[in-house]
Length: 191
Ligand SMILES: [Zn+2]
Image 1 (cartoon, rainbow, N blue to C red):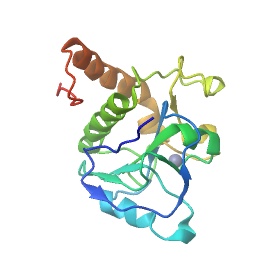
Image 2: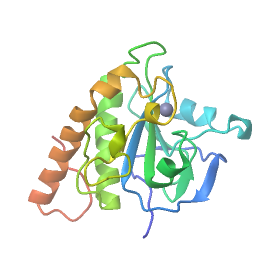
Image 3: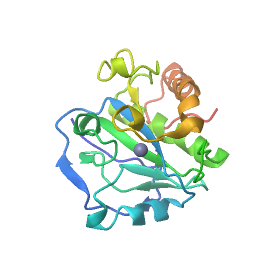
Image 4: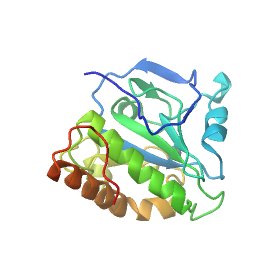
């Protein structure tokens, strides 16, 4: 398939921390929290040093700006699972440094817009969330995963975890409007 990157990204800081090309089509999204409020550039700077051994495809600053760090065609080092990161777009969202790791409204709205764009460009018809790690990889039932299923850590944090159903509903409403309008320009309607 042809890989593209999001036109919504306005900061590009490509990280050396990735595995090169994916071995699987993009069919999953994994939302993470930074546990410390950052700009999109600031998140990218964290992933620049090779010794960091970590990255994500995208990051969202507290002001809603979106950064690209690992191109979509490449596998990021984000979710402590090679299998997941080969098929998922990984997105770090700027969050508070302490539980419940809340994110700003602007970051949240940018996340909805970015995920909608990711779905449109990669042919993902809808986001599906059951909160069930037993369904990892069964993307027709659930195509959102969370870091804490792969490693014992507090990511994406309570704030974003509890909103995964809302994230899916918001993105799916936009996708439905897009299909209803039969628009073919790949731009998500605002609602
Ligand atoms: Zn994470």
